[in-house]
Length: 148
Image (cartoon, rainbow, N blue to C red; front, side, top):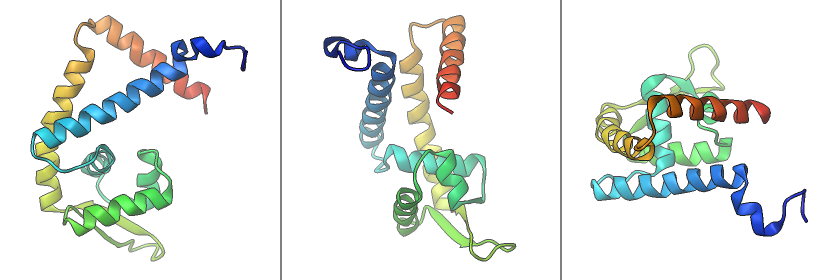
């Protein structure tokens, strides 16, 4: 026994199932983007979508909101900036900080990516009714709060 779980049953644990679902979603999203001719990773999508919803975040705010560490968010932004999808500029009130914005090209790309993510999201919840979806979301919120 390890931490109260039989090693043969670890794949039945809630944590394992949540991680497996997240990894599978990431794989499926990448495949769906490529099938649509969109060479963007799920991590890049998360950054672009967050910037669409909250334009002008600092790099550290963005890192926190997409659950990435600062070196990782820097690498993602470097790639997006090289591709002309985002631009970083100095914060006018704190010159040590950079604010990140989607470019017009980035906004157009986000517009192409969104329907792909919506389609995958719809596929994910097919077979669940509205009440089941609401309960599942509420359960996930409890799990997240338990780890804070």
